[in-house]
Image (cartoon, each protein chain N blue to C red):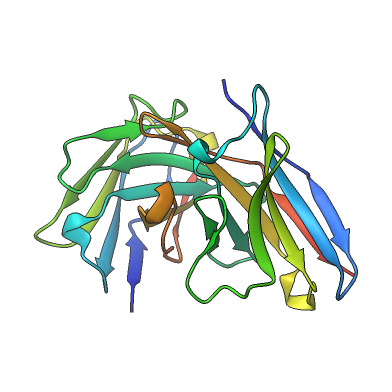
Length: 118
Length: 110
């Protein structure tokens, strides 16, 4: 079955950096576009970034553009999110999800919590 | 900036029917926005319910259905059950690689 395991979250000071990972199994990662979605504590879901299966295109929400980079290593079935210049408002659970049919979010991992605080 | 709108909260009686909507701050939702719907209970990851306006994801009961009603996407739950009490999110694909979630609807079954 599909498994998505996010990792790399933790506590970081404002202005700091963090790299999140998402290890995927149970589906053909190498031919799947992948998303990052986040959810601040007590708030709704927010789309963060998308990467095509071949890294040919990457897209970002305006709220993170210029500070966050999505990438992937298809040889390791792993998706990454490099987060720089972190702000308190980046505090959230970060989920990865493959692109599903009809531009949907197909499956969801359990997420990894990022806390930006001094 | 595009805002996707959802009711903040809704309540339904057990066995009743409820329709949640997903609109745009400016303009109408059409199938070209590929509306999809997700259910989330506190502390859990979201679960995909509906994609492409009205296609149920694998394993989703047929009491959940999606449609376009007027100028909005809609999620209808028929015969609501206690464990349908959750947060429901819609998301619209804006094209050019941008997705926007609605703020979510907290559904209470009582």
